[in-house]
Length: 256
Ligand code: PGA
Image (cartoon, rainbow, N blue to C red; front, side):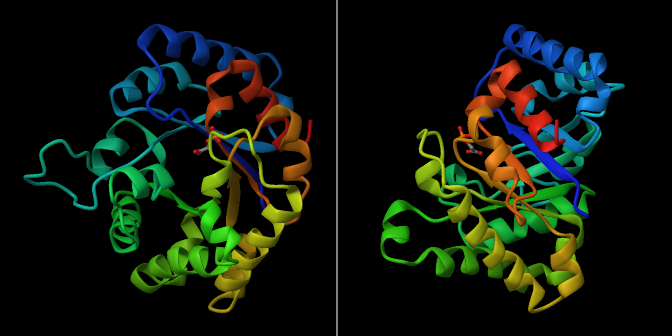
């Protein structure tokens, strides 16, 4: 049985004051009713400058810390980049790689995403590998080809065993930040396809693999998405910035 995971992706939002309010509200809810959250894993992926603040705020709670990006290099003359080992220094467990915003706005290609995935694992981090199609690709019935290629790049570079300590997030680009969620059936179809693609190489790894759905997950649709057999939780953008929404999505994943 896969334990569901809810990971907040704050993107480039926040301030010391706003983060404090958000983290205090979330940690207070978990401390007040730990059993409501025990059925799922929860994490927040924060902007780099706030890692120390979030690490301190989450200390002693079951909420894990993550980052949103990392360098494919371990160290060196790469001005402005952040290495996986630095994220580990601040207690990160997770790091998002290949988010569609990185692919679209910063030109990250499949090979670079695969290199970042491997760098994360070298540093002892759990990569959350994002895959997903654009609306045009879906309309042309290319969804499976696109997500298959994106996942395939990591399988080819890192091998199927690498997915034993990784998370995949299916995030249809047309559903991110748009309020237009994939239906539970649409999400399930793609999740099933991804798990089957891994199963072709290693059924045991496929059965254990956590596959998140991301794209306009809200308290109102979390239950029905999480009820799908291959949806193992969510990667949450906008709703992770609203304490009560994030809390309610975590509880939905925990079956409360
Ligand atoms: P959203 O973002 O929940 O705001 O749609 C999800 C994501 O980009 O990870």
